[in-house]
Amino acid sequence: MRMTRRTTLAAAAAALIGIAAPAAAADTALTFYYPVAVGGPVTKIVDGMVADFEKDNPGIKVKAVYSGSYQDTIAKILTAVKGGDAPSVAVALSTDMFTLIDEDAVVPFDDIVSKEKAATWFKSFYPGFMANSQTGGKTWGIPFQRSTIVLYWNKEAFKEAGLDPEKAPQTWDEMRAMAAKLTKRDASGAVTQWGVSIPSSGFPYWLFQGLTTPNGALLANEAGTAVAFDRPEVVEALQYWVDLATKDKVHPPGIVEWGTTPKDFFERKVAMMWTTTGNLTNVKTNAKFDFGVAMLPEKKRRGSPTGGGNFYVFKAASPEQQKAAAVFAEWMTAPERAAQWSIATGYVAVSPAAFETKAMKDYIAGFPAAAVARDQLQFAVAELSTHDNQRVAKALNDNLQAALTGTKMPAQAMKDAQAEADRILKPYK
Image 1 (cartoon, one colour):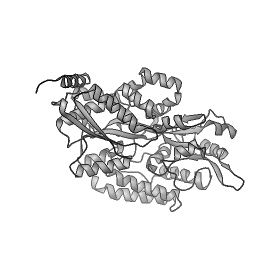
Image 2 (tube, rainbow, N blue to C red; image 1 turned 135 degrees about the horizontal axis):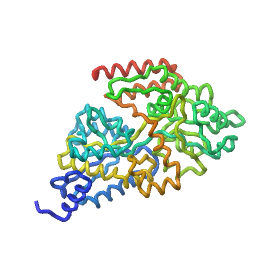
Image 3 (cartoon, one colour; image 1 turned 180 degrees about the vertical axis):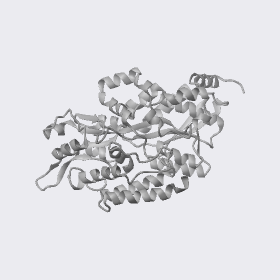
Image 4 (cartoon, rainbow, N blue to C red; image 1 turned 90 degrees about the vertical axis):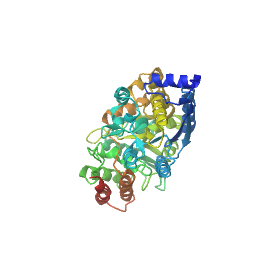
């Protein structure tokens, strides 16, 4: 093949990052699925980064396909895999790792990059983000849009309630007491502002880990073959969540929608909300009041699950496409791009090196809240991830919602979730 300027540039770019260039780089086309789970112009940001990647890597073309929510994305991926039309590369939940392995849909990055490259690249990310990216001695996902849960508070509401506007709750007891002071009712008794709101649709199991982790409980083993939903610490965590609404009456009753929680915060319907740090830029843009960002309150310890999406490379792609996909994943997660992505969205920059870039240092100097989720990583645990993860998570989600809506008592809900998960996971033990 005649070496054109495009192939020469692509080979040079690939060599710079230590991954062998695709054999026919000028002709390598990738289909890239990506989800959006937070507010803001994320599709426009992704399109811009893809365009910049193609400028830096002229031999690789990327067709970026917005694939909906995380749930939509894994469903579309599995459908495409079964139909013989899998994408070359995709961002999906880090917790989808076992599902994608079980479906024989993806290849480990260890099989695409050199041993020398793997030794340095994989270790460049925060260890907390690699917990949901590696299993069986292989690296199946590369961290990209990763997060932890943080607490946002309205400083004006705190001041109006006689609370220190610069101090977020540090413990469960403090959050309950502050929420009581922040909950406002009109003359008829109707609530006009809730003290605190924790979403329970979309990812209830993930928000729940923001309670179980501080209470000293891990929900699954590292192998993804066993869960611990019925432990006393887990039941106690659920009882606390239920009590905020039913006993303390400082939290909206029933199911709190994931997607509308930031809007409720902007409209001062809630004074404190739990959501992903991936919403940080959305809050910074749309909150018309001074706000703060804090680590989740502790019980026995600090703690939050990590969350968000990883890059995966698909088995059905050609060897050239797989190598090009690795080049794409590394470019998208390089320190400068990780900083760019974090500043644009609020997701945690995935490597310590990203926080050493001038752009990130300047951003944090002017907006210290951007460092909270990073600082919380030292207390973070892996997001719930098991084999047949969608069904196991659904068993937990359904029972969490049953408790929050009063259909079941917390202990019974967790007992039922444990029994269903044990049945699902039996073939993997």
